[in-house]
Length: 269
Image (tube, rainbow, N blue to C red; front, side):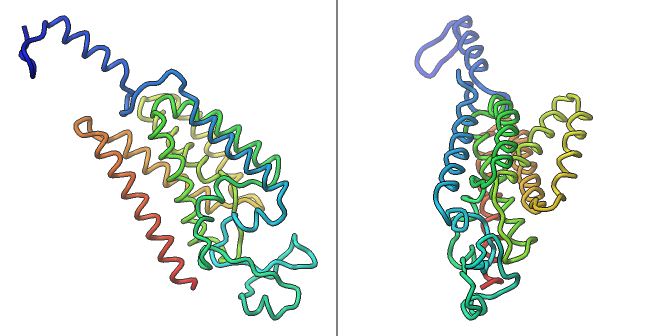
């Protein structure tokens, strides 16, 4: 018999309990669930719903896309804007409509922009990548850790846009979060000694796409680096106190990212 907190337990019972516990635990923490795609499906649904709203509501994208300082849109031609114009210059132009950015108090743009798309091909490609990568990552990392990876990657993508993109530029789309998932997937494949050459091939193609006209390479870079750091924290956390260390690490990355965004806002005000 084996000493327990209350009384004794038979060795067979203890072994069965340990076996069932291991069966329910995922490789890097978290609990195994029957539906390993639920978070992925919900994220896709949210992105698609917001896309439909953006198509139906005029001016919706202007309010929720990411603009570091703000932008001066043309009233006569809403598809164009006045580069490098300040709010005062926009008002004096007679044709300007000033749309504030994060520095103008619209802080929600740093996360809402990651769920916003205005073109069918854009949302289609991103959701296809989310479906392929998401269900695999969610199966290995678990729902909570996968969701943290997705959201923090989106946030670090926004931070990179804040610092590296033009203050009057606008950025939107889930690409930052998608590239964070690419980074996490690559790290996991390397960790288990999988076919890393195929992963590098896919990453190379997406890296080239990142520098095509109209693509925010800043969001891609920031999301990739953020996803890589979060994935490393989750994967390499020691087994002892693993959950505490993982969530503490994710919290530190989030706090540092928000701090970097706040510092940039102070520069732009």
